[in-house]
Structures are given as C-alpha cells and as structure tokens.
Image: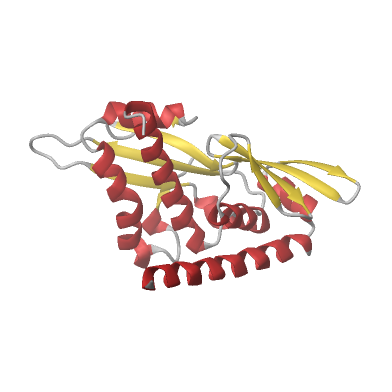
Length: 218
C-alpha cells in the first residue's frame, strides 16, 4: 500500500511538471523552438505536427492537443513526454561540436555523480562488462555510431542535438570492467540539469532491453 501511495504521488508530480511544460510551449514562439531543437514541423492552420527523433524511433507530437505517438507503436510514457517538451522548450539552437565532457564536468552536476553511476553506469557494467562485442553490436543496432574509445564505444542520439557516448573497458581475470558516459558541452542548452540524469537512465535502460531482445528474446 505504501509503495502504491508513493507511486501515485510521483505520478501527480510528473503530471504537474508536464502541464507546466505544455503551457510553456504554448506561450512561446514554438516555431522558433522547433527550429532550435532541430525537429521537423508541419503547420495546418493553428495546429502543429512535430516529428521528434527519439533514440531509434520517431515521436510525433500534435499541438495544441499534446498528443504523442511513437513510430514503433510503443507506449510514450509521461517521463518521455516531459523530456521531449523540456528539450523543445530549452533548446537554444547551438550545434553539438567535437568536444565531449563527463557527467561530473557538467556545471552543477558533480555532486550527483554517485547517483548517476548507480542508475546509469552500473547497470550497463553488469550487463556488458565482460562482453564488449554484444555491447557494441547492441549500440550500433539502435542507430549508434561506432567510436574508437576504450575497448568498445558508440554514440547514440537520444534527441536530435543530444548525442551521448558510451565507452566500455572490458573486464578480465585481472581487471574489473568500467564504463564512462560522455556528453557534448552544449547539452545544458537543451535540457534542464535534472533531465540529463533522466535521459541517461532512459538510454541505459533501452540499451539493456535491446540486448535482451536480440540475444535472449525477452
């Protein structure tokens, strides 16, 4: 009962955040924000249809109804809706460059590094720490771009201007496996700080789920 109550409270908080994000977009120059976010938009009278690349699917957002539809017919969770709206609302239009920084080097996030490691890095290490081939194969199968860091690495675009690079150093009899996640410094111009942890966790979960589907059928 207590767990159910906490979950209900969390959903109410998410709903409030979602409503605020909807109002923010409606009250903004939304067409300019679509351009800043790098998303395709079609306008018919006072209605918009916006296609948002989200990992390996396209989420279509209909305004002003705020209807979300996945190209994979997957459920679009409330958290995903919030992330997409925050991305569009925050987008400043700066293009990602070649530099990459770690989570701890993002201004304001160093103190949350232990939480990030627990939620994002450790599950990936547990799943792929001793199998760099499955790690890389899974990332590439999701549309990731192979990189040359560590023993295996790839970059996923969580959203059009949010690349996330995952680097694995495979473990063996002598060394424990390790993993690093890197971001473009421009990410703070596209997401609020708290959402950077969320989008990274979503990425980690999707990678692990895809590997299980490909190799375990579950």
